[in-house]
Length: 220
Image (tube, rainbow, N blue to C red; front, side):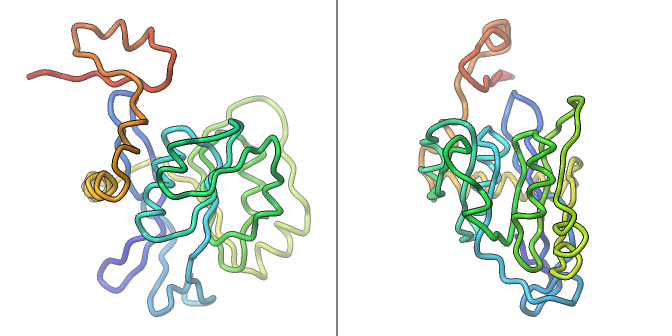
């Protein structure tokens, strides 16, 4: 969330490329002040958020939400996430936790790449909640949702579901500023996202690296 000229905007986060993590809040639904009301209708003061997926995109989303003082739950398959802990988030494993028991949430960010979780996000929202879809799931199959969630709750509770992929130049500038703030507020957390750094003439090591994200350093 970012206030600009009397407008509070909900923005999605995207990671572009494996060479370097670039975070940005993408333009989403307009939330007009006062009291951050979506579409000028329901009062909305986001306090609780859920991020599904503890990869780079999910953790950078967590970082941006924590910078804005939002209480964040991160959910993924792994039993733990030291980086999420370092960002001051609550981490839960989806193998042992029913996400429905943790809600409702004001914001849900789907960054796990699961079509089912994308639909589930709508049911995890509270009144006037916003769900941002950042993951991609092109697998064959079907995802399911309860009729009441989309036919009643989404309408009467003014919920919003949107996807994000493109970024404006302003979003990249904002993302760089956010990374600088995060390095001060959460020292060491961002560095943990990078598993390997190599110069350009050793690019083959980056492609062969299996321990996580790898960064190519371009020397001028």
